[in-house]
Amino acid sequence: MKVFKRNSVAFGAMLGSLIPVLIFIFIQEVFTIKRGITVMPRFDENTILVLSIVGNLIPFSYYMKKPEFEKTGQGVLLVTFFYAAIYIFVKFIKQH
Image (cartoon, rainbow, N blue to C red; front, side, top):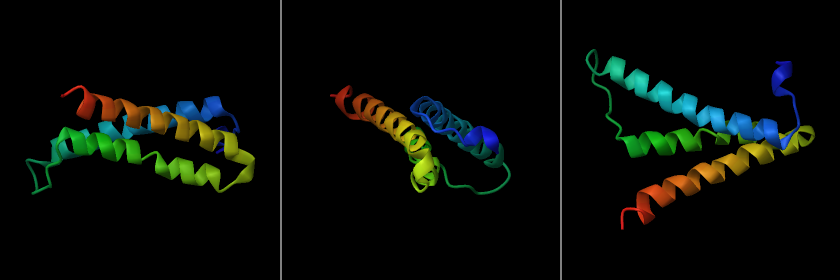
């Protein structure tokens, strides 16, 4: 799609912010709906948060493989580091 062919850090940051949220909602919904029907592995919230953040590797690798979209990949990476820093701060530093 043409909308994903932009090369800007702002677009990458927007994309990198949106994808983990969508992955988090998707995983929450799938495991909430399916638990009563079949035996599904139960992920705790920490696992779902980490999977959501790691989900940014898909668009990051896609954009960084194409030199014409390097700035978009940098934006995705920037937000990924931001989310990871927030997760580490909340999970490990704030608990102690």
